Length: 206
Image (tube, rainbow, N blue to C red; front, side, top):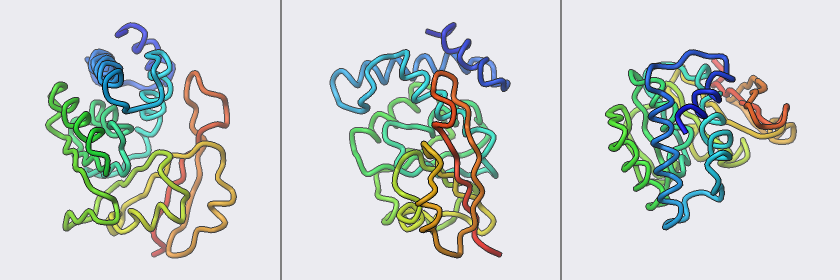
């Protein structure tokens, strides 16, 4: 599994910290093991987990800004856990209202020694950390107008909201209202069809 993940990482064309493939392999093993007992993800096959969970998370790595990252609707820890593995100096808060998924994220963070990860059971609307985040990220959580309702208030003054999407979200962008301005970038995920992944970067108008 480690060699297979390393090959997949090499396809991303970026350098990652030493031991990344090993840690990601442990994460996938644990996810598959838990998934047999507790339904965490509809994806059952480890090979598919590599592209649909690991690589689909790590393509967002260059988009993160600042020191603090909030992953809203993290599910069992994606994209937060893979990103925390490759950015050990950033602080990640993983947020989800599903208890069993947050329990897995907490377990995996502990198993991997990720002391830069905090997993919290809460809805984005109700979570009140008392501060904003440099980056808020969400993967396939909701349409953009609803997404900023759920978690837009968690974006710090000069922060960015990274919304990971599938196809280019034309209609969602048309419905997005001020104060948000946006830029869209296409993401290339090895093993997934070209044009099937995009990131919308949202910032407040100055």
